[in-house]
Length: 102
Image (tube, rainbow, N blue to C red; front, side, top):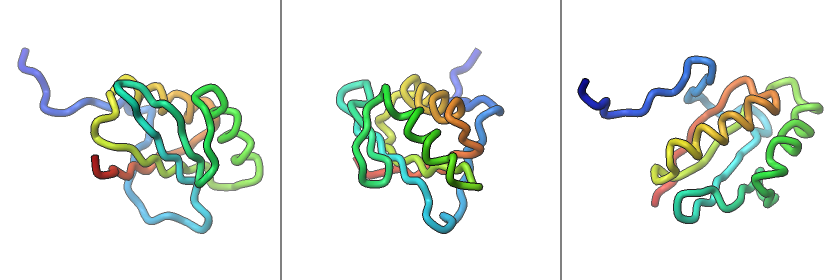
């Protein structure tokens, strides 16, 4: 079976491209090697362990549960899916991807 030239994202995860609404949540991943070293939610630094609870806290005060996820193409697919899982468990309805230059 030939290898696909792209990675498949499960259909349960809504990944979309759209215009940011008013006051969007911007999550940036900072990668070292093959792992996310830390994140920034808007400008506030957070760890892998605290990401889900902090996103959940933000969603309590918002009607729209959408995250803008900024990362580089070098983010390994397994790390990408781990982050998507954290975001879904925190109540994210959709994720907008923004690729950063390497």
